[in-house]
Image (cartoon, rainbow, N blue to C red; front, side, top):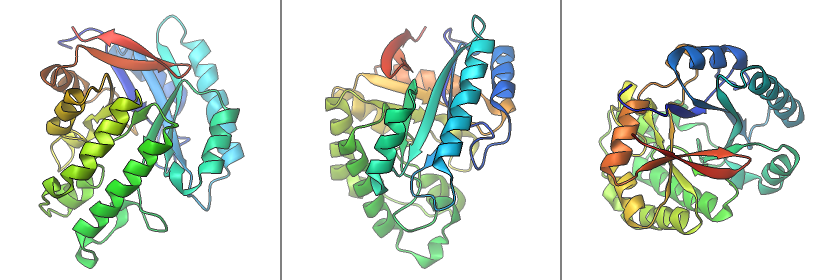
Length: 269
């Protein structure tokens, strides 16, 4: 690592529907890789028709708590959750957040209401600009809901529209909406995530790209979180060094980690 203070604030254990390894295994790998701070942020998809929320939240919370205690002194493990589509059922989302005392909440939108995840869509059947228009509307509503700490992968659909389907899109069409989104985050004292997963996928870019990170800073954004979005123990920390470089290039001198929902600034050096 070129930098000290190696942190990864977006990871998934096997409590996520698409996760693969136990929380203990993630922590062991993090220690081996020299990661100082790890947040386990399993998927809590609020619009899921299949998830037993009580069982999921309880089991995930208990296991991360046990791992946190076991690795104390070797790794700062933060108990987190990735709250997907919270705006589609705000009462349920708010109930979960009131009952489980997480360190860190990621807010995200993976699908439009009553539709599949962007990952599964056949883009030959859709007007991608219409999808993106609705997506950014949903992101803005999520930001105005304001019950999370960091906004995850702002340009999430690009993973699949541009990366997988090879459809080139002009996001400048949505600059008015993304401007309001970034301004809302900044004014509310929320963080913007630099998600490094896209660096190792067909997209070959962070989510969001550098121009959005820089604009967030220009609008007064103070907090940036870095996450690999890893779903495997051996992919923890991937791209984090490049993410730190981008943060510095965009004017950020600190990364942010959250403990008991309070931001803590970590120097980038």
